[in-house]
Image 1: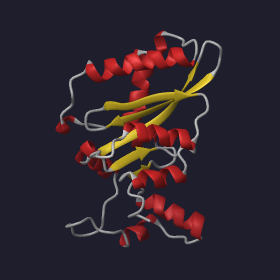
Image 2 (image 1 turned 180 degrees about the horizontal axis):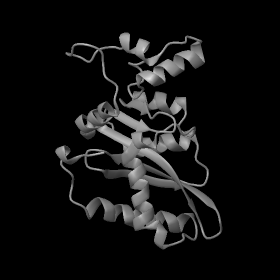
Image 3 (image 1 turned 90 degrees about the vertical axis):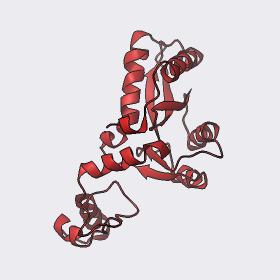
Image 4 (image 1 turned 180 degrees about the vertical axis):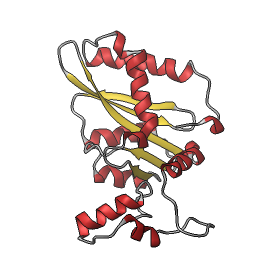
Length: 207
């Protein structure tokens, strides 16, 4: 469980064992059987620092995605999909739809990620729009999908912050009239965001 879910800590594994398998153990007991880090001695520590360290060390090979909702002037709900590169925080893809589906989402990945991409990991939350079938297809792309723990938005902090930036710098100042209007607004803002900022160096990445 620990190897297949690198974002889980010992308390989470203990909870999963008790709820799903009826095996009641304490996190301390889980710690005794925790897989050691490569090249290290003793049990693997599972503080929040380890996730930060992983993201910092692999930032150049990680992409992250998220959905957020926009309401138009006619009270129509539109779903915006963002895909970003953590190493530079560049937005790789931005698109929207009124009816998000797994197939539509998979198509966004196809359009955004080239065949010779350098990425190894994708961070995403547990949104049901991205189904298990989408995850399987992403593995065929050469991406390892890292789902964030439940009710832990800080695990996908970069995308969460990007969504906040979109709202503060763009959408808070206007109400889109419709889907085409919102698409045009976001396209212009994404161009400004990607080209109007200095590219981040690898060692400047922070959570």
